[in-house]
Length: 231
Image (tube, rainbow, N blue to C red; front, side, top):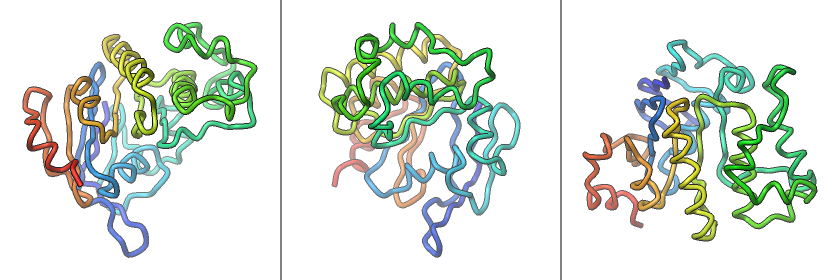
């Protein structure tokens, strides 16, 4: 469904991505692993249109999207949960969820009941401001807001960062449920090896803007992957 082909990306004179190729398929979780600063977030920004690429191409559902702005990619079913969550702290939980209506036709501008089945804690917090939630609750809200857009590709940038273990387990369960329905491709950037290992159907390890290891879950050798995660 998603095909990234030989992508180069620059910030000024600094090259952040070098010939990066990656795919993500419906009904599967593709995990991108690596230390801080190796280009993981730059790759996601390229896919969602927040940063232009210099060379290569990005296809989604058999159509090129490299030249499309972010909002056009969102309308094509791509949802992004950024690192640090980036919820609106002064808006209520309900208002944060409704910001997900922007790419939807009017007939679909409602919050699916499923959101509260996946994240029951949000149902009782609809009138609370986003900034009053704990870090873990804000992460659940950020994922829920992305799901309001009815995505066919869900991209998550380090959803476990700064989150308590009990909520990490809840997020892992939700991602697994979404994958098993077979209706969505999931691209997950992560540093926490155990979380990635438990979810990954395919993996790619980045180092200095390049993919240095990749393969299926069965091909993942823990010691080889951890070598690129330790500082």
